[in-house]
Image 1: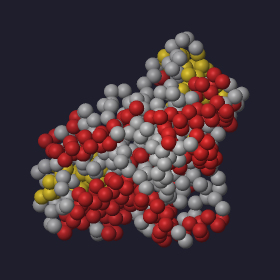
Image 2 (image 1 turned 135 degrees about the vertical axis):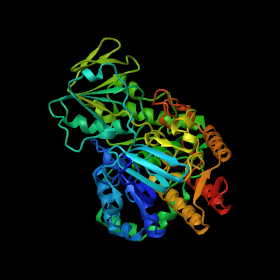
Image 3 (image 1 turned 90 degrees about the vertical axis):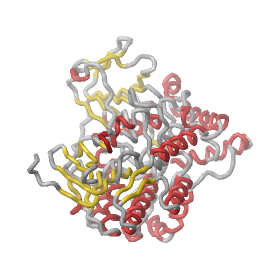
Image 4 (image 1 turned 135 degrees about the horizontal axis):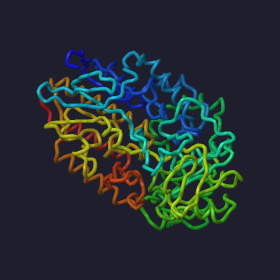
Length: 538
């Protein structure tokens, strides 16, 4: 190992999804740095490379869920649907990578397992699972917020002789569900997307649900031929609308409060937006996440819709959320999710009544003794969100401090972009940034642009080392918590926003909830002030 050649570069980026590809382009083509991406997969796509489960689809509209830094790409690429499916998004990212000649600067099939800050040399030393060693002056993580698959422990799961799949690590081959009994565990966003598709093919589908979820119809559809030409004639308008909104979508809630709106008028607004579908339903009023009474009105509206759609009253009751306000967990959008429970081959199993006890070779066994015979187990159990993918990198900073130890009481960052004790490290859409509360490409471009601007500043100042100050990171983390506590968000006790889906994970609200527009202003203020909050040295 000691004689092995070390691949050294000025900057290394981990991950070849939306974040990594754009960051590589900026470092290489704008700053003329020797920069490379290290990617675990054999192709680009990031989250969209791994999440290829049945029904996998984006919940941001296609013409907004894409890069906006390059008008030529916007004009050349034509989206086929309102909400693009996994394959189309991955094709898009391959097109972008080819268009910008990025793949020649990507190390594929290399999963990083250790990142060590060498204090003497002031460089990052990275080791991959294959044993290769890389080093760089700057390290940028582009590993995604939802990329570390959550694999819950179930007693005797190893005894199960059927097929087992995880939505976050779906195989590239087609999975055959015909003439098979299938159990899907989990009814979060991935489960809500996968369940209707699997139900159409499986002989029998058991949906094992612990916590029911609110969901709004996507109303997905093919885009008319004229859509693209109209879109590219108004690129700047779309850009400005997204720039101005708190979620990075091209719309924002009008200044009206649900609880103060006449009952007939608010019902008409909610009905109209339900028929339009998609995430803009959440923006029907501007106090949904702030006022408990307003939230209960919209929550009850959705519950009534569930009872109207689902024919069996007991099933409808089990599918109706009562333990968290609408919008305080990730709000899924769906295609025929609740309608699927009217099928004769679909049965809902309420795990609140009787949790999973164990497995044997062909059955799931519940605490009450019920046995469910299945051929295939699908875990739609989400991710160790926001921190899991970072902690898997084996990051070791100054004085040998490990990231998992530094974050033992919860993640602490400055702006969600940098971590004390970890010099020359930047985290794209890290905890403490708006990230998962936004249309992700908008947060990603803002982060990458800011990091690129900072590195240009360092180069122009002949500075080579930068680190977030501990006191500023503490203050920022407290500020993020204070903002969250002004909303209803923390009331969703089982939310992965709080890390509650991972046993033993600290309960800390991780994303910045004051809007991407306000966050952008905060970042620009830091930059304009000479990057206060950072220790900078040569």
